[in-house]
Image (cartoon, rainbow over the protein chains, first blue to last red):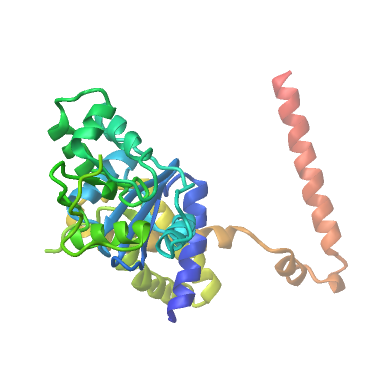
Length: 199
Length: 119
């Protein structure tokens, strides 16, 4: 049987599954300049962006715990995110309009992640400044951990957070990807990362 | 042994082609096979998880077989209008309309009896 025939048949099956509430999450792999992105969309919005063509076991466990086993390949559900990511990578989008579903994170993590969405395009901040912004100056390590577990990178721009000493800090998708994203937003990257501190 | 599927997506990726091929062998027609494929996976999603995690493949085949037998049984009970026409050709003096009228009369008779019983 040809691939597109299987795909069409599956599409009809998934439409019935969706109507019955049996397919809470739709996912797909999106190609991007920073490599494959595994994207999952739940009933309320984007719930996962994972660097790579497949989620790791922990990520999938988190989704099953939050949404049940109704997690299916579904390009139609991820299409709006894919479109916005394409525009972002092409330098034609500065903010994301798709809804983000942050269920499953702690209230503190959610405060941190919401704070990240307020860092403007092309802006940079530090883990300490994020901690300050969520009202806890001494929690920069905790804020760093919350930034690090961001389930929807790029859309929630954790790449705009760098270490207080001006080095790039960490990134789930690898520092190469972080450098690339910052380059899109600021046109060019100095060799060796960001030398100066801007918080 | 292979680990059980964690999501419906994984279940589909692993088995949809062979379950469709099986459905095609059972039904002998593509539209019927697609119906059976859909019914099988929807039933599996509703009944999730499989009774034994290490044997989801056998579980899916069992669901497909049962769904197919249910379908065959049901279609034996139902007689389509086309078949009814064959069963009662007009040359016998009994038209399809006569059969339909007789059936309708019987239904309304039964309804009347039920109403009386409930009164």
